[in-house]
Each structure stands twice: as structure tokens, then as C-alpha cells.
Length: 170
Ligand SMILES: Cc1cc2nc3c(=O)[nH]c(=O)nc-3n(C[C@H](O)[C@H](O)[C@H](O)COP(=O)(O)O)c2cc1C
Picture 1 (tube, rainbow, N blue to C red):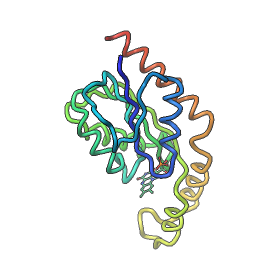
Picture 2 (tube, helix red, strand yellow):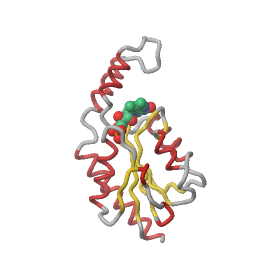
Picture 3 (cartoon, protein in one colour):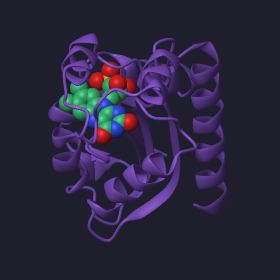
């Protein structure tokens, strides 16, 4: 089974997940989403993105649009909590970018938010939807240490399980 791990990562969080998957599946090809040579040769694609505005980031969307019908396992990092409605909506929106989507599974965990982004949010007026609140500051603080070793182990275990399941159904 030919496997691709394609990822988009602005500040390195999602790249860490991609590398952990690659360590678990060393025969897979690993590459940034912008430089995938030929998608057609792969039987399974692990497609990784960072969440932007409750969806996949822009270059990931462009890549997902080219994965029509292909078995895709989505993985992502985001600032919000992984069990939040926001995380679920982001995964759903990303899956909807794929024509004839065949999403076989997904994984999502928190990722440290760019300090420049936090600086920007800190100066937003109180009526802005991203304005700082105690809960939001706690979220940003909680995100700081992610992805951590537990996340990297979890994503590696997840990838192995996804592959096993795909091989069983192939
Ligand atoms: C411009 C921008 C928009 C973002 N939008 C969201 C968002 O809508 N929801 C969220 O939970 N996190 C959001 N984040 C946080 C990132 O998704 C998170 O930090 C992610 O781990 C970054 O991954 P990377 O290091 O692979 O680039 C945003 C970050 C940036 C810079």
C-alpha cells in the first residue's frame, strides 16, 4: 500500500505530528502539501493542516480539493480544545473541501498559538468575537505546551491503527 503524509504547517506544530506519523510509518512518503509530486500513485493519504477560521488553512484546502474519492485520514492542530465543537466543526469543514470525500478517520490536538497572534488578540476591543477573556487566556496558555509527547504518541498510534484498518479492508 503506497502512503503519503502531506502536511501544511506555519509554525511547526502540524509538522511535528506529520513527523511522528512518519516515524510510525517509515515507508510512507512525507512532504509539505505545496510540493506533492503526484497524488494519483497513493492508496492512502494522511492529510495534515492547522485550523484557520474553523476550517483547514488555505493551502491545505487547495490540496484537499485534489483528493477526490481517495482514502484520506485527516490530522490537524488547533488553538482550541480538541474535544470542542469548534474542533469538530473544523474537521467537518475540512472534509467538505474534498470532492467525493472518503475520510477514513481523523485526529486533532492542540497546538501552540503564534505569540504574534496572541499579541494581536490581546488588543482587540471587548465586543470582538476573539477578544481576550479569562477563559480564552487560559486556552492560549493550555495550548502552549502542545503538541506534547503524549500527542505525538497518540498520533503515531492512531496512524498505525488507520493503516491496519485500511489494509484489512483492501
Ligand atoms: C491566522 C491564524 C488563524 C487561526 N485560526 C484558528 C482558529 O480558527 N481556531 C483555532 O482553534 N486555532 C486557530 N489558530 C491557531 C492554530 O491553528 C494553531 O496554533 C496551530 O497549531 C498552528 O499550527 P502550525 O504550527 O502547524 O502552523 C489560528 C492561528 C493563526 C496564525
